[in-house]
Amino acid sequence: MSNNTGMVAVRRIDTFVLRAPIEQPVRTSFGVMRDRPAVILRLEDADGVCGWGEIWCNFPTCGAEHRGLLVDTVLAPLLLGRAIDTPEGVAAHLTQKTHILRLQTREAGPLDQAIAGIDIALWDLYARRCAEPLCRVLNPEAGETVPVYASGINPEGACTMVKRCRDEGFRAFKVKIGFGDGRDLDTLARVRDVMTAEEQLMADANQAWDEPQALRIVERLEEHALKWLEEPMPVDTPIEHWRRLASSTSVPLAGGENFSTPAEFDEAVENNVLQVVQPDICKWGGISGCLPIARRALQAQRSYCPHYLGGGVGLIASAHCLAAAGGDGLLEVDANFNPLRTQLALPFPRLADGQLQLSQQPGLGIEPDISAIEQYTVLHRKRTE
Image 1: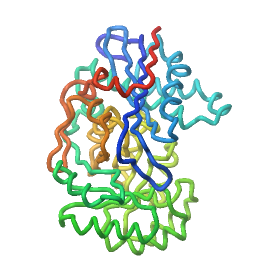
Image 2: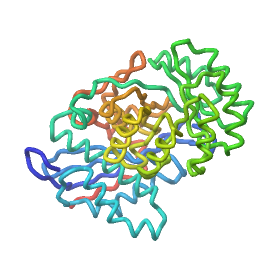
Image 3: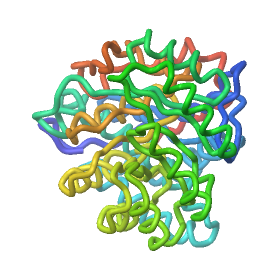
Image 4: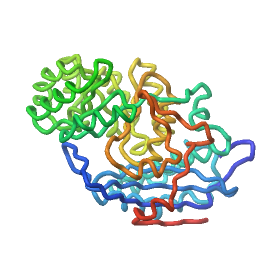
């Protein structure tokens, strides 16, 4: 990691696997989260400077422990003591070094997610060494706020959730659908009835439909004036099916959280399929991989709206990536109860009138309170050189 103090190596890696109990499950069309998991990384260099990262781990239910152990047993030995020039170089190195393992195990997804968390932590560490907020390291012209929307709104109690989120400062809301046409349309109608004319509504189907189902329901969705419809079909649906769906509706289509290569994003943009591009920096690519995709999307006149549903470290990192990219995109903020969101991102940024205020402290500008979340820690592994 090159700066005015020279090249620095990582000397210690802490991996924390956390699980916070919740009363209200988080439901999607393909599964239910009955607790809130998080895998948090703390990287420390030879000078004692540290950086924090987060790994996507929502599914399957055992996924958090598995990804945490991948870091501890596979990736940490490849990173500790290695001379570092740039975070991008480290991500590429770890990907290359695990190539045969990916082929042998078919574990590309969990490995990509673990490497993404390391990449985020390295960028945080690098920005702290530069004594600058991460967004300014990535783009000196980055702003201090990012627009946000409330996400993860279940059909049950959706109207109550929207009203609560409005009181908290949100002005845009995304509702989960994909539970049957009648129920989905009823949910959207009820939510639209409690929204003001200035507020925005989005819907997320979580890959629930095949092409005939999607074509049937999008006609009915137009009356709700959605800002976008997210993942109406599985992401591996052939591109010609996506083109037919996109050309059949005026509702903008969104997606990208489940893409895993730059080529997939480029294909969706070049074929005029996605109007809203949503990479998840904790799920694939980290900042090194997702920021270039965001910039290409903006150049193609698309919106970049980072996907995110996890703990506080990944949320704040996503906010910095959005601020660095610029454009008219919104940051996804899960509206469901999750103590791992706020306690992992202290001091938690101020939210007002649809905008999140980014810290101007170095790096991510947050310091997770590990002692406060000790009750949620189910695994902690420490590796040193």
